[in-house]
Every structure is written in structure tokens, then in C-alpha cells.
Image (cartoon, rainbow, N blue to C red; front, side, top):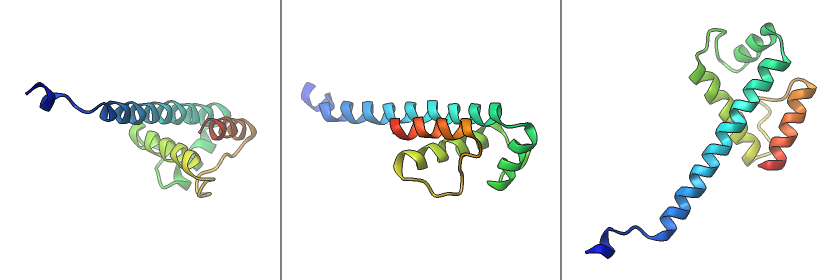
Length: 101
């Protein structure tokens, strides 16, 4: 009976990888948004949001999803081109993220 209730070790490894990827994506998604806000004035941030289909009053979840979408795009491809770095600080941040990803 004990063997039936014990999950296989591969399940724990898989969960660890998934949790690790989710954690890295979260951290870099938050870092991307922080750099976006720090390196642009409010008008440019609003323009960025509107360009990506969000309103200036977008909530935190919508901004988070946009950031995580961008980070997943960076990690998995060269990029779609729909979201891109728009100044030097953002470009440097993206290069670091690409090297880690």
C-alpha cells in the first residue's frame, strides 16, 4: 500500500523544473516592467500600453501578463517584434535576459 501512495521521483524533478522556470519568468517579468517604468516617462509608458492593446488605466495583472508574455517570447524565440526594447537601458536588460534564457 505504501508503494502505491509514493509518487515517482521524476514527478518531483518535473515539478522542480516547472517551479524554477516560473520563478525565473516571474522575476524577469517584474524586472522588465521596473526597467520600463524607470527608463521612460509616464507618457511613453502609456503609449507602450496602448500600443499593446491596454488602456492607460490597465491594472497590475494586465501589465504583469504583458511583461511575462514578453519574457517568455525572449526565452523561447528571438522575438515576435510586437513588444520590443525602446531605449538603451531596456536593450541592455533584454540582452542580459536573453543570455540567461
